[in-house]
Figure (cartoon, rainbow, N blue to C red):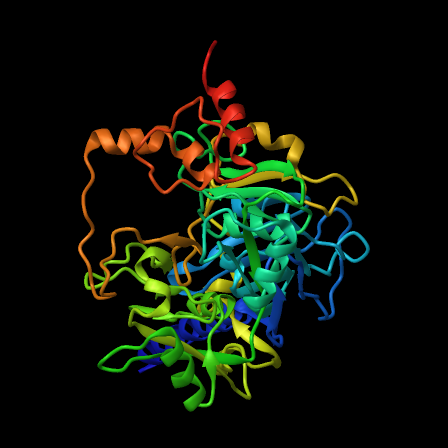
Length: 493
């Protein structure tokens, strides 16, 4: 009996020790966390945003050892690191190099608010900050919506037919304004592609190129970028790049069995309590996901598609806004659908319950909250790692980019996809119904590519026919100058 009691006491002692160790382990994994969800931010394309993240829990800073900072963008499988920092060693994703800073960090190491400049469409989404110091964690979440869209506009009457003053008026009539160079660059970084020269607000003429080819380069030969022809005479004739910032209504397509002429489309929209949508309103709706693969009238007398995703039943090609050639409209007597616009009481994205403002402080088990402790594991070529000097929070390492080779200039725009472009669908039929593109021979494609710069700059529609190099009769006051410049640049005499 004595032996049994002694054995039982030993087992009880072991159990007590084990339970004590488990309690200590659980206590060690408990940390204090403050979780804040900030009100959503809306900022225009190419502008800046300050995303808040400030550590307010009681803490003690050890000299030489600051907090761990980790900013991410996106959610779920699409979430990726924007920036991480610990003790002056910072890693930044290539898409944010030169665009991010921690402006409050030098004065207060516990202020990790992120300043993001040169906003792009694909910056929209959820940003999350984790600020860790000892056993205390700050987790801030903010949703950013980048508003506005840049689009290429050409007169329905003819390509390259707008003086600078006419370009300003054309954008205003499209519910937009002439775009700035910064907005065009932001459009380029949001996947915009258009090999057509257009006015900008500084009176320069430029165009963005994603897929360089002969006669259609970016800022350097055979490269992506924004081609710049510099400041031009305001009487010269080009297209224009417009910027539509926001709208307080909705664009909706209207279809009737017999289709509509332009005048009938206008009257139909009025009968529905609205009016024909402008080009800028259509682009804003496309950016918000409007998908209508049937050609439809808009207010300037042009006919356009709005394609937000690739579909097998849509012959309009990749996502974007496409335009039916004016020659197929027969002075507005052809019949199509209509894009109508009407004012509404609300605007912007609907409220998301998971992103409503909130503030919670309590204890959490780190073993059950891996996101709080997981440091970014990416060590690929997509990230640049540097050590900051004391007081340096700008994160602008342009002088160190030589050690960051082959970084792509453009990231794909994930919402809703494609480029904000105006492109004539020259393979559409006269009926405005679904069409089958007509193929071109290899020789025709080569000739078209070879003469593309002259064709674009003179407004010529006959791409495959090389013009006479001695013919001084051009359809644009800028064409002859640009043709000679291109010839001198591409030929060796």
